[in-house]
Length: 90
Image 1 (cartoon, helix red, strand yellow):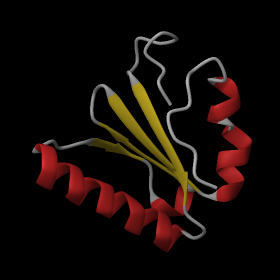
Image 2 (tube, one colour):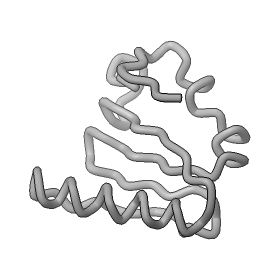
Image 3 (cartoon, helix red, strand yellow):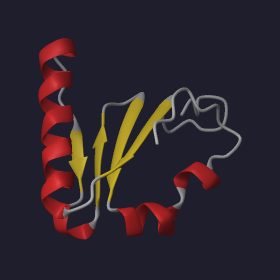
Image 4 (tube, one colour):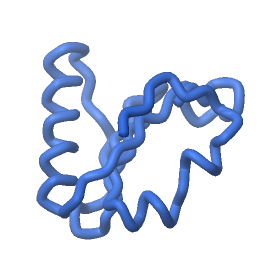
């Protein structure tokens, strides 16, 4: 999501779901590895896989990885509905 016109927090949110705590952890690990390899960036990490929400803050890009229940509960897509969706995979 392109949130740069709605917020000073970041320019973009990347939001995805993992169906288990193991998958949430695996997705975050892959994000960290790929961003480090391609851009040389380290994230500030928040959350634990068992909590159902992990966050990687790269400054202008924030990656959210949710369990399905937490993604529905926090509903960031609805909260930031004025933001432009760049890509949505279902």
